[in-house]
Amino acid sequence: MTKIITYGTFDMFHVGHLNLLERLSGMADEVIVGVSTDEFNAEKGKKVLIPFEQRAKIVKNIKFVNQVIPEESWGQKKDDVLNYGIDIFAIGEDWVGKFDFLKEFCEVKYLPRTQDISTTELKRSLKNFLSIPQQDLVKAFEVLDLLRRDLE
Ligand code: C2G
Image (cartoon, rainbow, N blue to C red):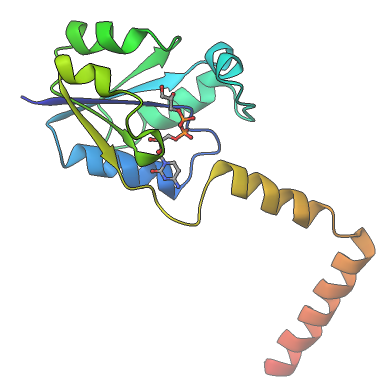
């Protein structure tokens, strides 16, 4: 029974997060995920949109995940690896090298990220969409409606 652990914010859950968790499930029998609390995200200097309870609930309900724990500090990883009997620590390669100190206690793997998607990108696209003047959006939908009718 091999166990793998990862940590993350998982804000505005998207396919990049899902791909990572799916990969973990192919690497071990049990997947444990440390979801960053709102307080820890403040410490990471990361603004989150979705509160911890909702982010944790979504991750807990992903079929590739067996257990969710709160990630409250940078320092908890070693204790988690020892207390949960972790065989592998894995995380996206944006963190490459940052957690090599865990090699003393378990395997450490940095995995390729999913390209062209990130919470930052989603927020930017949403902001751009919402910045389109209301009347331009209305006009665009009217034109689309006319085109659809022509095609019918
Ligand atoms: N990820 C990915 N592909 C993306 C976006 C994210 O593979 N397009 C991965 C990240 O590499 C990370 C995980 O999904 O392994 C969660 O990403 P974030 O929620 O951004 O997590 P982060 O803020 O990097 O927190 O102690 C570790 C930190 O808590 C990691």
